[in-house]
Amino acid sequence: MASIETITGKLGARQGYIARLGAWAIEANLALGDMGVFFLSTLYWIFRWPGRRAISETFAQMYEMGTKSIPVVMIGGGFIGAVLAVETLPQFQEIGLASRVGSIIVISVVKQVGPILTAVMLAGRLGGAMTAELGTMRVTEQIDALRVMGADPVRTLVVPRVLACVIMTPILTLYSDAIGILGGWLVAVRVEGVRNYPFWHYAAQSTDLFTVNVGLIKAFFFGVVISTVACYKGFRCGNGAQGVGKACTEAFVTGFCLILLSNFILALGLNNLYNALYPNQPSVL
Amino acid sequence: MAENLNATSTPAPALIRFKDVHKRFGPQVVLNGVTMAFTEGQTTVVLGPSGTGKSVLLKHIVGLLQPDVGGVFYRDTRIDHLNDRGMEPIRKKIGFLFQLSALFDSMTVGDNVAFPLREHSKLSKTDIRDRVAERLAMVGMENSEKKMPGELSGGQRKRVALARAIALNPELVLYDEPTTGLDPIRSDVINELILKLHEELKVSAIVVTHDMTSAFKVGDRLVMLMGGSIIADGTADELRSHSDPRVQRFIAGRADEEDLRALHRI
Ligand SMILES: Nc1ncnc2c1ncn2[C@@H]1O[C@H](COP(=O)(O)OP(=O)(O)OP(=O)(O)O)[C@@H](O)[C@H]1O
Ligand SMILES: [Mg+2]
Image (tube, rainbow over all chains, first blue to last red; front, side):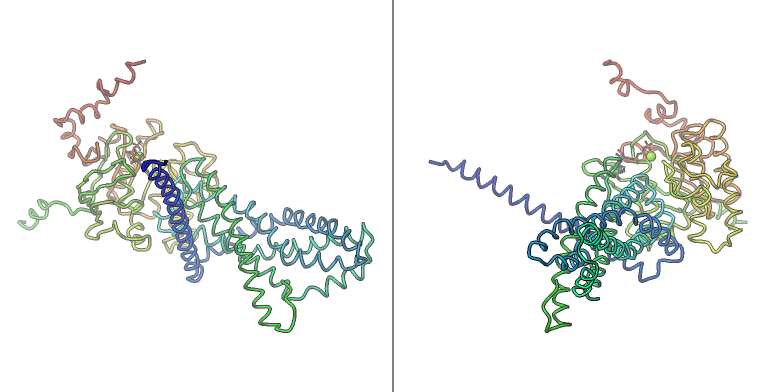
């Protein structure tokens, strides 16, 4: 027979879990809200015109983030395209449709793999660097120094990074798409002997402008997510080297989750848009 | 004549006023009811043991920290509840030397000193270059414009930060340990610089320091912060003859039994 104490004890323990879950939910909500406010103040400065020096800093960041990311994005994209061909081609050959492999490679690369893979690589490469740089600036009071000198840190530090990231992510996605398709083509046509003309024919048939735009629209939002999360985590980073390291990890994990979440939401939304624009065609998403 | 006498006898106006300021970080109480006024045109030295909240006190003046209770005033404006945009006109008039310099390490020394000028002045490129060279020369760092902060020693960084703090000709300069980490000769140069700014440009100053030589040399008035409140306030002579033994020990640099107890256990 369970005594009153053990029952209330169990209840108490369960309430402890629930209370902790509640506390966690409140904290997560507050953090999201705080990040939202942070993003709004970034938007505020972008639309209020952040000033000539912020714009020239944006170009410097575009070089730093964009141009220097091209190799990693191309290598990543190329190998994924090639692997897609390696894995899918046997299935298509089995049903005698090897020439159709181009369509599956292009659709996967342009709509999903290209944008997501690029975003994840950039979240690692750019997000980490941004968080570490801004976090170190916070820890060494450089952000306080900006504020004391009457230079809004969001305007001088965040706006250039967000703008550069939002502009460069779609461009890098295009690179990744192109090299990914090329990688698939290399394996399918050059190695496995699929004929060249049908490969491109079916590839082109299955892709329209809308499909490419879907990838680019996604990439645009991924750019927003990566840079906002990374800058936010840098600005809110804890003390010391440990604080900076922790902020970088959090930035990557949060960024990664938000990329996947927004990918899902965007797929739903864009699917509906496609159905509204082309009501009589089957959905491609 | 009578009016003239009157003018000299009324106290100079307060530039910064703290009114019953309380500040705590978690359970730790740092400021526990600080009430005091920093007089315009004076150099006030803030003394106190390490970790009592001197830097915290300075940060309240530029709005980097807000009091939990109480108010901070700049002339007659209450500033402790202002946001960054509201603080901007006041911050432009204040130069702040951070204890750890806080130079922007992605910019050259020259760009660091030019930063407040580019941000807030309408000076031309050549004027900015000249002003930067002049301020760097004032702190003994001439011809270092092209260097990066990472290539400098701690003392050199401090001097560059000082040049940056006074670049815009502020009416109030807050120095957080301006001579810490400098050799005695350099320290004296910085003391002379503080005096010169004070005498020639009528700059008001608040100097946080542990360096008693410097404190007595530059301070028109010395205050001591201990245990969260001001325990002594007066001229150098008044402090030297202060009745509180804690003040006496601090000035003489003498540890008491309490301070040394941990050592005796070894
Ligand atoms: N942002 C902060 N968060 C938490 N605690 C803080 C923060 N800033 C200061 N403190 C605490 O407040 C106390 C006073 O710090 P402060 O930097 O003002 O000391 P100080 O008098 O300037 O000492 P020192 O002479 O060594 O520079 C310290 O104990 C410190 O731990
Ligand atoms: Mg300090």
